[in-house]
Length: 131
Length: 311
Image (cartoon, rainbow over all chains, first blue to last red; front, side):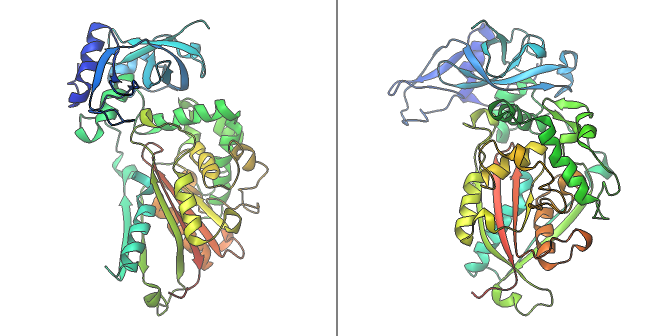
């Protein structure tokens, strides 16, 4: 696997993915969940941000289907869908579909989960769910 | 700022000249990606692109190229019911204009909506026919003081207003992918110029992808939210239509050597000087050039008028 980008703010997130959980920051002052991780709360500026596991349920904000691989490690997956997913906890993530691209609907309910076999770097997958 | 760098540079140059920091500024660009047959390389870890590398690259999104624009286009079509045919009209209209520009890369190559829709999808919903060209090319723009311009041999074109905006780094952190920074940059430019969209005679909008044009038409206020798909129909943006757009043939049919923004300015000036031959827009007095760059993330608008102005 490729080296993790130099992004110490995201180390707990990366370590969580390796353990199969999605860890995100919650502001200790205003209670807002934020992603990507930052050194402070982007809304209120508080320095007290705490890491905890979040639920991966959400809605597809936008999707695309890659007909070409972004890099060689994705070649066997083509065509694959990538989406921006708005999680119910109030943050947006980018994830690749763990199902066939034609099963992905914009506006559809999905659940996001750590990719157990990431092609290049630790990341997120999603799959449609009922409702 | 990518392809919109040149519109940002007009803003910087205009301010520098107004402040007396310089009298004349030259904005240039040249690139040969076609001759070089340059192929996109996998992203290398780079602290400058930390969010892209950390949160986008693991998904396999085609970024920073088509992927972010494809996501915005999908959302746009879903939210407003805009169709692939309406997107394709942007490419087809540009080809009609290119038919009157002998320098255009696609000169003498007619194109129909059906042709565009028959091209392969790359990153749904965008086909290859929704994408700009890869060509060689270059250009330059000279800006100088109003006082100096009055003494020159060529007819001057005055910068009446400009505006710039950076809306996000990567699409992940954009709150709203389809209401772009053109709302901010366009509002500032029109405000500085004391004009409204109805005052513009000829318009040049960066056409990196067909959808970029539709989103920008809405952002600049030429039509309402979700209306650009129907706005471009019926020949309105083709030669002879009520809204002459991308009269050089644009990045889709004229040229696109990596960054097209310089050519938006050049075509605007040529139209205002009446130098465009067969594709000349009759009576063009006010022109707008709008660049979009990065991940649909940088926007810059320049409004120009024919002739010298008093300081």
